[in-house]
Length: 235
Image (cartoon, rainbow, N blue to C red):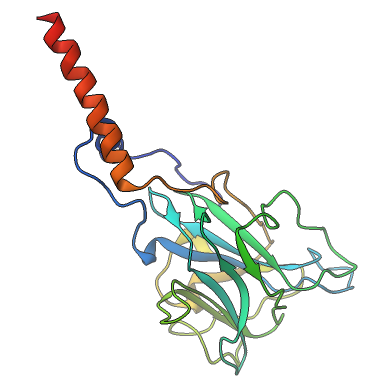
């Protein structure tokens, strides 16, 4: 389920290399999805998979998306989104076709520690909010002052926040809610199923600033000018 293309499209490559106009480094909000929610961490039971809860994002697009100003939030089953999981600061970005996993909640005594996932090096602040193992909701917004919901996942029969219908609660603390084949039909019930948790982080997911469009354009013009000069000398 972790297959994805990380190659830059030919059109984008041409625009960068030849300076044919400037392109935006970010895609629309719909490019980002909440791909996995693990809410069974922080316990002491023998079946707990990981010591902490986590939320995994995935960038479905072919270009990087800067995350400065984005916030991951959690709401209890009947509550509102007053719990910040993580607020992304300047320089945070999720690369094209990349994953980004954010750990949250207190570490329990059972399960495997979350390591090598860039979870402690994100530019921003986290609250350490713990997720309910039975019912709740997680959402990604792109502006805390005037929230625009990028994606929302509600789970459990008592959840009041969800897309179309809530996903069934995880079947145990040994599994996570996993999006099926990265599909987003805006129906949590059909988009998510209980599966073995697979937290993943992409190599360019954290603190990798995206070049400004003007800088790319200038670089393209410089390359084009150099090529033109070579052609003149060759005549």
